[in-house]
Length: 177
Image (tube, rainbow, N blue to C red; front, side):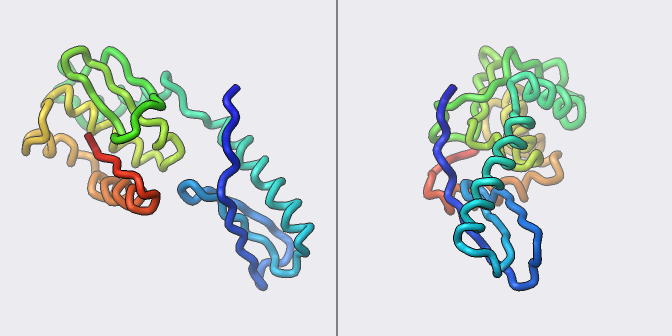
């Protein structure tokens, strides 16, 4: 099993927080919220505990190629039903070798590859990237007809902004296509 690197952790102390501790992922970083009164030892203990909880939760919801294929069918039925005969990908899968793109599509053979970098992003961002690639099975280029298909997704503009923000924040130059 591949060993994952420990995430960057930001601890935020709160005087209003009395006993509860919570944590969430913010991009590549994990934010842990703790009471201000915790000692450094308690902080360290709780950070480790919360990282373990987050990892366990993420493992339970690990996104698979099968789940991605089901998602592609759902998006096709909802947004591309009028092109369903053309939107039949031969494969839809997560890949780890996409360093300059969020996803890619080869219309000639119907393969769609989605970067593992978006696996932990919100569902609506994954849906946008996947719909973008599915739309290439109808229109290979980025012309007006293509963007009309992609923009059927109500959160398309928001998702593009989210991805642009991630690119800027991480220093990665990643493109839609």
